Image (cartoon, rainbow, N blue to C red; front, side, top):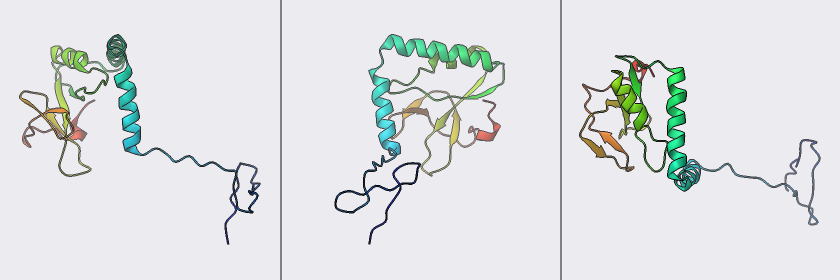
Amino acid sequence: MFRVRPTCCSGREQRDSDGTAGGATFHMKPSREELRTTLRRRRRALKAAERARAARSVLAHFQSLVPLRRGLKLAVYLSVSGEVDTAPLIELARRRGCHIYVPVVSHRRGRMRFAPLEPPLKTNRFGIPEPRFSPEKACDPRALDV
């Protein structure tokens, strides 16, 4: 016995010449890893000028939305592999007296931890630079302003 599935919104079924349900093409949703690989490849294909333009655009947009003021607790990622460069945002936030925190990879899944962005930085298991984590300096994500 076999199930017959509708192949379109009309609910009508289609059968192949052998009598089995057919005619439908099912596209599997890409896995998280496949999606990351595709996005990483597309980012790396961008020219340096395009990436620089994107970084300036992000900074300008961010400034129009968030007033960077002294004491603000800002979480930001450190750019790798062709991601939009966050260095201009980090530099501006430092000049304005913001406290800057970056995510630190935890060995326990499902828990995001943030550490102050201060040297020395080390490279984590994913090749991403991060500060050494110290629980007494960590910031609870709920305490971050942005």
